[in-house]
Length: 413
Image (cartoon, rainbow, N blue to C red; front, side, top):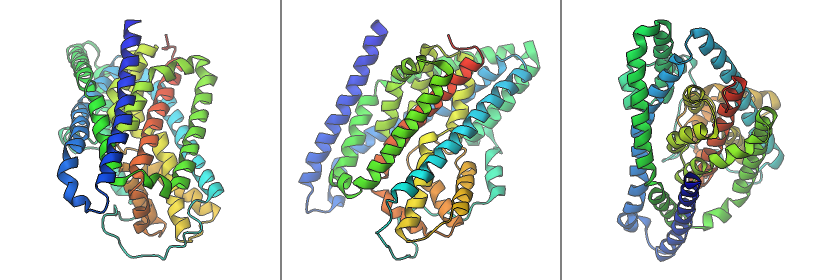
C-alpha cells in the first residue's frame, strides 16, 4: 500500500509539472511576442538544460543496463535452446506488431488524407531538415554489428549493444559453471544501476517542467491550432493502436492487461513528457517485474523491444511519409505504398527511442521514393508534440510484448 501511495504521488508530481510547464511556457511565449526568439535564448536555457541533463543521465545508464540485464537474462535461461525458443516467440511478436503499426498508419493517412489541398510546389533542399541518402542495405547490416562494444556503448548504439550482449550471454550459458562469477558480477552491477535509476527518476518532475516550458515558450499554443487536423488524426491513430495492443494483450493475459496498464502509467508519462521512450526504460523494467513478469524474461525481451518494437514510432513513419507525399500532390499506388511499408519494416529496427530519430528514418525513406525531404520542414515545429504520443505508445507496446512472452513462457506470476 505504501509503495502504491508513493507511486500515485510521483505520478501526480509529473502531471502537475506538465501543467505548470504549459502555463509558464504560455506566459513566456506571450511576453516574447513581437521580438526575436534569439533574444530570449538565455532565459529559456535553464528550462532546456533541466530536460537535457535528465536525458543525459538516463542515456548514461541505458547502455550498461541493457548489457548487464540482457546478458544475465540470456545466461539464466540455462541453455541456447531456451534462448532460441524465447527469442523466436519474441521476434515473431515484434514482426507482427511492426507490420500492424505500419499498416495502420498507412490506412489512416489514406483515409483522412491530411496533406491534400496544401498543393505545395516541389522545392530544393531546405536548411534545418534532416537529410539522408537512399537506404543502403549493406550499410544497414554493417551497422547492426559493432566493430567495438565500447564504441557502441559510448555512442548509445543500443542495437549494437544488444547484438554483443546476445553473443556474450549465449556464450556464457554454453560454458556453464565457469561463467558463474561473471554472471553474478553482472547481476550485481544491474541491481546497482537500477538503484541509480531510482535516484535519477526523482528528478523527472523537474525535467518534465523544463521540457514543457521550453516547448510551449518557443512554439506557443497556437501551433496546436495550425496543425490541429494532423495532430488530432495522428493521436486518434495512436488510440486505435492502443486498443489493438490492449486487445492483443487481453487475448493472452486476460483482465490482467488492465492491471499492467496501471503499473506502467509512470513510465508512459515520463516517455510522453520527455519525448523519449528511452527515458522510461529503467523505470519500466522495475514496474514490469512488480506487475509479475519474470525477471529473466523482462531482462531478455525489453532490451530487444527497444531495438525492434517501437510501435508508436512505426505508425508515425508511414503516416508522416505519406502525408508529405500528399502535400506535394505525389500519388503513390498501393504496391508502392506496400514497398514503403516493407522498407520501413527494415529501417525502423534499431532506432533509439529518442527525439527526432523517426525523422531521420523518414528522411531516408523519402529519398528512396523520390519524395522531397524538404517536406519534413512541415513537421519540425509540431514534432515534439507528436513525439510525446509515439514515445508513450512505444512504452505500451513493449510492455504488452513482455507480459505476453512471460505468459507464454509460464513466467507471469
